[in-house]
Image 1 (cartoon, rainbow, N blue to C red):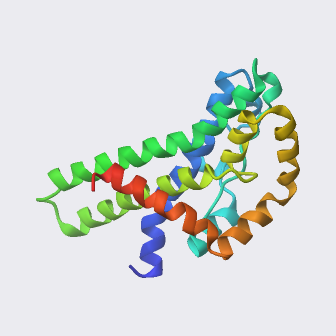
Image 2: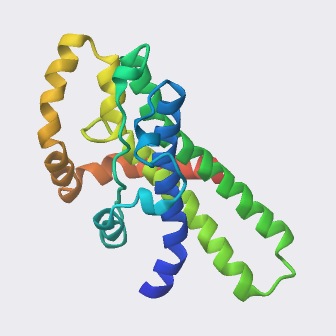
Image 3: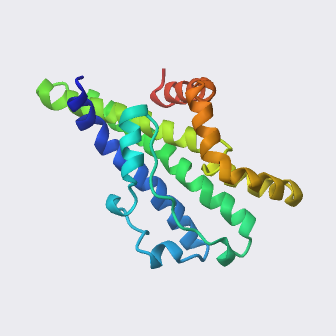
Length: 205
């Protein structure tokens, strides 16, 4: 595909994957008693409320993107540490569900789309394939335990309190650490085999 075709194919599943990821965070937080996201108008599937323009641009340039962080106040939870673990798992969890659903849709297109014109079927197959990959990528990448990713919040809730306090000191440097790991190739080397394994598992190869 040329760059324009690639954007047309990848943009819808990427935007939806980011949107459903952030919505899941906010929805679980809301169910646990925190209405911060709802009060700020973020408890919605409207992508315009969640997209970060720089994060979207980064995805098409370097294949890693992000949305605006979902505002969550754990003080409203009965158990803040447990609540944050659940909220943090919700985003990657819903992305994995979306990857599975996308694989099912792809199989249905293969089954029922054989008699349809190729110019109609092929873009749909490409889009569902992109959806599988993008959702798995977002899920696995966000589980990396480096601030500000979801994995760091999960780890924070699992560590003993003294270790958790020490771990929070990494937060101001998390983005720099992520960039360093990405550009040295260490992060892709670590997560790409996991992503490939998850993709093979989901599509049945």
